[in-house]
Length: 179
Image 1: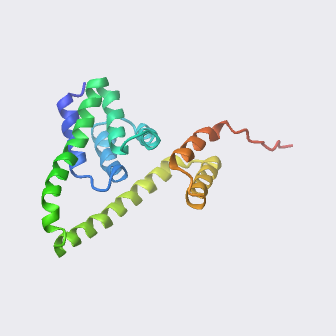
Image 2: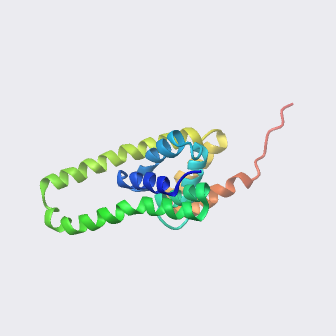
Image 3: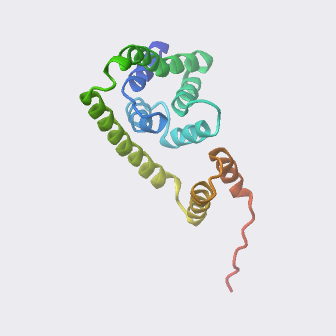
């Protein structure tokens, strides 16, 4: 059984070194929770991220909550959630105190620019890995194409697209009969 302290500490570390939100956290979470600790499978991680996308709140917090709950029920949920949000609370408090004074500093601007570029690379890595694990057949390609069209072409809400994608397996498909 995973200790609550270990759960808190691991999610604290992830929260401390994750810039750019929940998607940027995914590679770190995969490395720690799936590969090193073997707490969850990669498929479970993708499911948690998918559910976290369409539920209220921050994706990283939702994923931490799901994993914590799986491992230690309510106590695990609380421990993992507090672990992942604690660094943000501490860092935001420090940044808020210092930002006004140093925001115009060129080195600070360069640091933020570097962080943004790094986050883009992390997100591309996540998208590539999710693509490889999630799109497995023609139906997957069709769902992806329709979702992309609805998102980029019609600016439909991400929540609506996720709900439609969840309903997609229930849409009847006519199959050709081979003779």
